[in-house]
Length: 66
Image 1 (cartoon, rainbow, N blue to C red):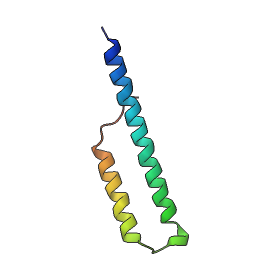
Image 2 (spheres, rainbow, N blue to C red; image 1 turned 120 degrees about the vertical axis):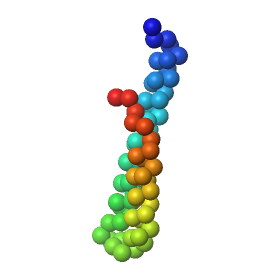
Image 3 (cartoon, rainbow, N blue to C red; image 1 turned 135 degrees about the horizontal axis):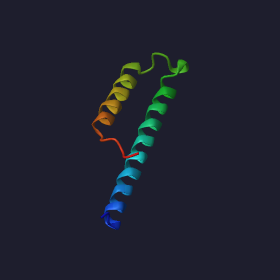
């Protein structure tokens, strides 16, 4: 039997994961804008490092329930 508490916790976890994924996508999109052609070469190593770190941390987060 599934209780309201279990359902609420599952929904909260799913909502958190969805928000987290949206935040990661937004951060990566911002990095793409910063690394666009108009900024070619400007802090490229730093932007690459930040992108790699975000992706590394993202892989550590358990996926949300569909």
